[in-house]
Amino acid sequence: MTAPRRPGLDRRQWLGGGALAIVSTLTGVWRAQAASAKIAKAAAGYQYAPKGDRRCGLCASFIPGADPAGPGLCKLVEGDIPPNGWCQLFAVR
Image (tube, rainbow, N blue to C red; front, side, top):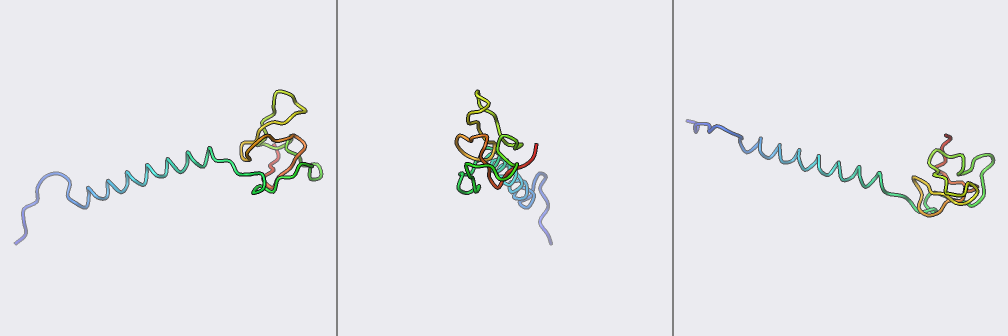
């Protein structure tokens, strides 16, 4: 003889819903960290000279500074980025 079922969530449903909530929260946190995380110049293979016709000033991730000839920022790499530098993350605009 089985015990009568009580209305509401059973243990499996409750645990499954809790696990789903935890995974959803962690996924959101990881995405936020990934979006804001920048890597070091050394990890990106950064060099202060262009590589052929490829240079930071022409990269999709480059954010120009106030002075067009001066350093700007990069969406992916830490620190000030001169427009004539280059790294392995270069992507054509």
